[in-house]
Length: 342
Image 1 (cartoon, rainbow, N blue to C red):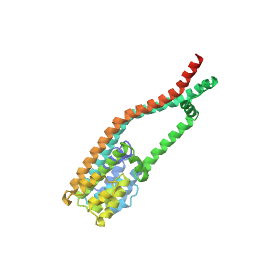
Image 2 (cartoon, rainbow, N blue to C red):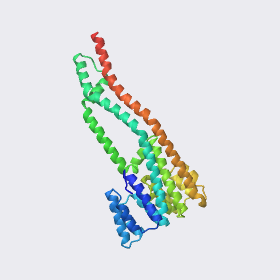
Image 3 (tube, helix red, strand yellow):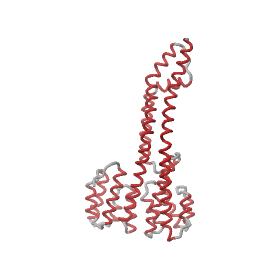
């Protein structure tokens, strides 16, 4: 299979292929080398070849994985969890299913935001066009006739005089914001800031919690002790803030704290998780995590639909506000000039 699309699509497809390879109980070394020939990403291809070479050299899968640092952290975590449980194929299949769900939700959100984004950019473009090429001429005409500029007109003139530089600055800020989001948007204060955004923040949080709950359901079902299950789940998560919370929870469990108290004590976990999972008996814990995962996934879908529903009117309001501000700032003084001449 030839992998296409972005890096996330490649990793989801790769995890599915690895799951099939492990489930078929074929030699991992030659299989990984064959998969590497189909991966377009150079770094991922080299990582698979290095992993295959180490396996062929006689290393155990766990040792070879530990010595291969170029694999994506969450994919590495998934493979470590699979090796620990002895069910690598099943764990990687679950990981691939989670990645496919995330990608499908991302596609739906991107599809729903495409036209609102075009509308908003059209409004911004029209406003910039007026500010850069129309406002200076209007300002000269009004100045020649001694018409005082209203505050909105002065603001428009100021923006027009600095419009191109300001436009370049906005582009720079936008590009830098994308870079920050890509490099660190799932950890630290950046993740906290994004989670505070209405609709978008809850969407990400519910998606992260659904992923964590699915990992826990799978690991608990394989009879992995809870502290170790939390650490293994943390390694397979994209959201590093949630992985850090899982590691802290594992330490508290080892110190003797009850599961419900541990879950309630971490702000990264939703109160719903403590309510559903905390009181569950040991034999029903995997099912409780699975129910929580379905609940969070449903909430993420609802937030995605809400975002798509709100995006178009918000974009239309933004475009109309920008264009209306520019037109009002220009034509209100012009009306005053016409009244003077009349």
